[in-house]
Image (cartoon, rainbow, N blue to C red; front, side, top):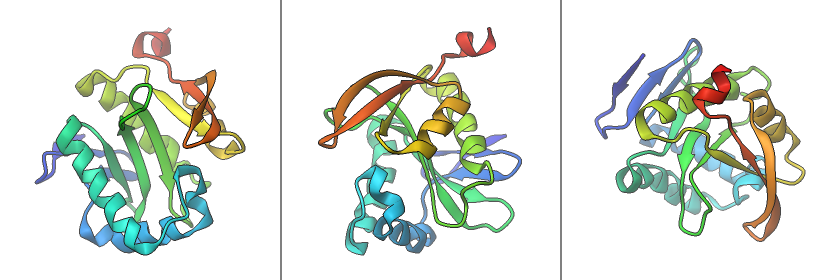
Length: 177
């Protein structure tokens, strides 16, 4: 099921997740994530003051590109569990589907469930069918999730001044075959 937020960001509901616009109530979880070692795969750790800019950039991406990343809300607790969705920043090769989970939410399949929903929505509504994921060397958990989502390694590139593998997600026709 999907609907729109006040910011015209679609709300997608899955069995255990609500994908929704970032809200101010998400800031504490976002700041804790940014300051933690968990953020090392996405440009962190970074100080609390930078987390506010990251949250605002998430909203701004929706405004500039018409798509972006959703907050993953755990339906069981109402807490912000992480983020998933699409980014296409300056200097990137093409739009990416990315994800991360906040501490305490890993190992339950939430990233898989939420990212599956984001991939389906992106293909149908944004024309983002068969996007890439940038996954840095050593990020074995993200590589395993990409593989579970059906993605395959495509090529190695430099990304954020580090070696990174581009993983290609199947388009809808490939996934149906």
